[in-house]
Image (cartoon, rainbow, N blue to C red):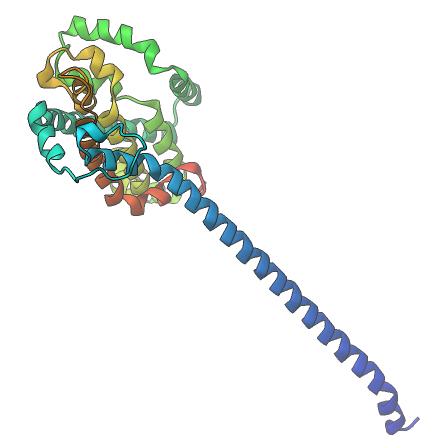
Length: 311
């Protein structure tokens, strides 16, 4: 058989192979296009749902700010309106003179800052012990410690009050700070983050003669810094917004924090709702500012502590 005959016979097969390859490419392109369309639709639906949820969560905040700028007589006006007949910035000035709100803010700042620092220190130390040290009964002790998360605050406030009374700490800053400075939540959060730190880094430090403290401060802490930022935000907000325990432990108004100060607006000359809303708006500034300041660490820190960023 001549070469020309073989070439003629092979031509249909080449056309068939070329046609099959082209059809396969078109099919893959169509599938990819369909996947992209579905992905775009999913993204659009997700964005719409997120926008709706954000608006729902923003409504109380918007209404609080709106009420803080209304005259007192228009707070419960019917029909309700977002804006009153005038914008009363004077409400924000009246907050500071109606009650000693500056004292409440200062007390809240002292308690929240010192309490947060103490929680971070104790949580870092306990998390390092539970994640990097080896000792008998470590895991059992950790799970018992973790079990305290299931005990509600209401169960321990009376024993804690009696204990604070015996120590003579009632009506003091230490009564507001110390009882909640040793939390299982902080230890658990940082332990999970420390477990994601490669052991090779710690072993390299040991080869250089580093002590446990140097390894902790020089190697572990810089890696888990985002998770520490998460703990700082959560702890600061918890101290700042705490109401039940300060209500029990504090009788002297000079030690009252912001939530107790807001409660005092209800007892003088009736309920001044416009002032309560103005004071609430002011009280949100420290926590919102802290969250905004540390926001770039928050997502990374949560991922690291949940195990998504490592072990």
